[in-house]
Structures are given as structure tokens and as C-alpha cells.
Length: 502
Ligand code: 6YU
Image (cartoon, rainbow, N blue to C red; front, side):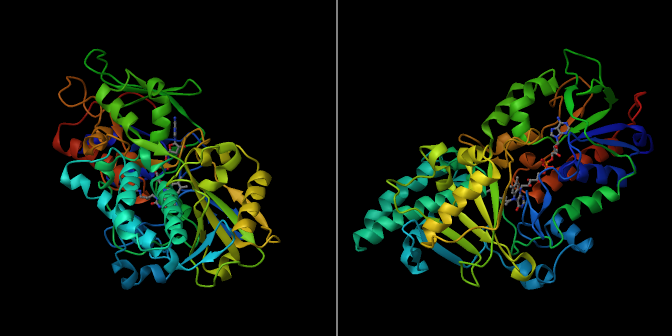
């Protein structure tokens, strides 16, 4: 183990997975660990900003499943970053299967506030179908290619049995509610449409117990604490990597060279790549020389990476109930069960499923967070803050029936046009299986090669087999790849270090 301390390890990307990998390696005694980050900041998709006087999250929002098995929760607790409620045993024990039981307010496009009972048949059927969608993974078969096709066809089939005695207007409302719920799930999955989410692999995702909680001082506090424990100068900012030169059996030079955008070439024994899947999809052909092996490339292509954006909106006074935690918008003019908007430029706002309410009011005032996924969300990113504010104002006025409501301020995220992210997070696309996530995390050169092993390692949320799309998943992949190197050096004779300056 002693000699390994001279090995040179470069980590590409200073999001939570890159920081976690560096932290683990440094703690294990590796002395030459360096992170190259394209932007001027740490955190990647963990990004805290301000909105008026409030601290808001532009990227990751919650600790999903805050309990003792969740490493993000444990670190946040250790660093003193959580509020008292999140730390209660009751909070950690409540298991909601990934769908928090928020108190809803429901508004319809005809300007009516609906009673939850009016739409409970649709909500119950949708919850049942979502649960069934997760079962196909263990059953080893998929009657439909996508979650969207399965849900739509089953709603049609079951409605004729179950909703026959409901009057025509209420029955029509249930169809519209299903469309709204599909739009919610587009945001949860970060997908344009559930027609793009693979049915067989949907159940791969695992949840942890605990009621989702937030960081009162901002999610970036987690990153700040971890980075502060790295040696000074471990992170180089504004240093995008253009190409990773590695060697397979045809190109035998047994070391890795990392070429930066400014032309600098850095030699290393190992590189851990943590760039987002969206970036990888777009740039894989230039990012690796030689290119990725075909099986790995196919998995990069099969896995999905979509957009989910937020629109923060502040009001002078609330138009929702005091106990309301989520607002659902139901369009009563949908012609079929749909989660896509036909005319994106004209009607992109129809994709916004509604808002979550920022709590506590004493801290945030009257602030909502709107959620919008898909190509409609990507189009929204091209609009100015005034154009987005105008669309949201018209929307709220229509759904509340109050023509005077005017937001005080609006702020929206732009994850698709972020050149280093190219979207929000990953989901299993059509035709995906467990094997694709296995392929994603497989180091290069692939097993069986004659070349130096573990030249290129892969971390990041899209490489976790069942916590993909989350911060805890990303963090665990950083630790996983650090551990891979640690056990490599504890098991074998030390590597011959390269004479590079790190
Ligand atoms: C979570 C949550 N959350 C909302 C929104 C977003 C995400 N997530 P990073 O991208 O962080 O780091 C890579 C770095 O690499 C980055 O700094 C780049 O600049 C750099 N880089 C790129 N190219 C480079 C180059 N060439 N050279 C050098 N550097 C380069 N997760 O736990 N709770 O509430 C949310 C949410 C709007 C955008 C989220 C949430 C996802 C996390 O943010 C994300 O996974 C991690 O931060 C990624 O870290 P990383 O290190 O991998 O990459 C049933 C079922 C369905 C399954 N889905 C369940 C839903 C769960 C997801 N929910 C998300 C919801 C929200 C609201």
C-alpha cells in the first residue's frame, strides 16, 4: 500500500461523486489526487442560489430517503447541516416508497379548485399502476416497451370496468388527472415522456425509508464541508478536459494522458471520469481516444438522460391553503391521456404539472417551485425571465380564476443548456436492463485485456445500479471507484509512478 501513495489519480468533475472519490482516496493516504473541473465552482448539479431574500436550490432539492443507510443523510448530520425535524427517529422511519404524502391543492383549467375526493379514482388507479410498473423488473418480462404505454393502455382497460358508474363529466376529469400525473412522473424520472422510460427496467430504482428533507442553509453546504477536507489546491477550476487518451491492447503505452481544453496534457496512472451522462452522450466520440468499447457506448445510448427544470415564483400573498404542500394543475381540455404538448412553442407551459410550496413560510415568504420536464422544459430555457413570468402569470390567473394575481419575481433553472451537464438526470430508457448500468460502471480497459488495468474508471449518478438520478447514488459511486483503487493497491505490488507533475 505504501508505494500506491505515489500513484497519480486525476478525477474529472467536481460534483458530489468526484468530491466523494477524492475525499476517500486522500483519507486512504493517496497523495497525488487532483480534480479537474470545467466550471468555476464545485458541486455540479448540487447548486444553491438566492431568490429575493431566500436560499433556494437550483439543482438537487431533497435528501431522498434520509435514514441511517443514506450516506448523504449521515454526512449532513455529521456536519450539522440538518434541521431538528429531519433528525427525528420518526422522520427516518417513515417509508413512503419515494412518493411523499404531501397535502395537495388541485386547480383545474376552468378556474375551479377541486376536492381531492373528486379525483381520487384517478389518483388511486395511477398509484396502483405505478406500483405495478416497478414489478416487471423482478418478473423478467415487459408486456409493453415503456411505462407510458403500459399505464395508458391499462387505464383505458380498467376504466371501463371501474369507472362505469361515474357520471360522464367526472369520468372525463379522471382522464385529465391521469395526464397530470404522467407529467408529474416525467419530472420525477427526468424524462420527456413516460413513453421513453423502459418498463422492464423501471423497477431497478430503489428507495430508502425517511421523509425527504432539505438543507436549511443550502445543499452546497455538503460540498463545501467535503472540499474543505481536501488538501489545498486539490481542485483546479475552469479546466475542462477535452480528451482522455488511454490504451487498449492495440495501443500499448500503459498510461493515461488527460488533454485539457487549453492544450495542457497531464499524465496519470488512473483517471476517474464523473461527467454527467448527458455530457457523455454528446461528447463520447471526442472525450475518449481510443473510443469507448461498443458495449459501453450502447449502454450510454440506451440509458436515458432528460431535463427537469424548476421555476421559482414569489407572490405577495398565498392563493393556496395554509397546510398545502403541493399544487396540481389539471387541464380539462386534454383530448387523450397525454404527457407531451403538441405545439411546444405555443403551449409549453401545459407541461408544468404544478408547484411545490416552500416551507416554512416564515423563512421563504410565499414562494412556489414549479416543475417542468421534457422538450417543453428545454424550450422554456430559451425564453427570457419576463417571458417565463408572463406565461406563469397567465397560467395562475386561469387556474385560480383570479385575474389580478401577479408574481413578485420569477427565476428558472436551465439544466439542458448547461454545456457541462446537458440535462438533469438519468433514467432507464426503453430496452434498458441491469446490464446497462453494469456496463456504465465498468472500468477501461475491459476485463481480459492485456493492458494496464484500471486506467479509466467511471463514477457519477448514472453509474449506480439502483440509486441512479440521486445525490446519494452519485456519492456512493465516487466511494465505489475510490475503493476499487484502494483494494487494487492493497492486493498487488505497487505501481510504477509516472514522472508527471500533479
Ligand atoms: C437528489 C433531489 N433533484 C433536481 C434537478 C437536478 C438534479 N437531483 P455532477 O453533474 O454533479 O458533476 C459532474 C461535474 O463534471 C460537474 O461539475 C461538471 O461541470 C463537470 N464536468 C463535465 N464535463 C467536464 C469536462 N469535460 N471536464 C471537466 N469537468 C467536467 N438528487 O438526491 N435529490 O432532490 C434531486 C434534482 C433540477 C438537475 C436533481 C436530485 C440529481 C442530483 O443532483 C444528481 O444525481 C447529482 O448531483 C449528480 O452528481 P454527479 O457527481 O454524478 O454529477 C420511481 C423512480 C424513478 C427514479 N427517479 C427518482 C427520482 C429521483 C431524482 N429526483 C430528483 C429530484 C430533484 C428535484
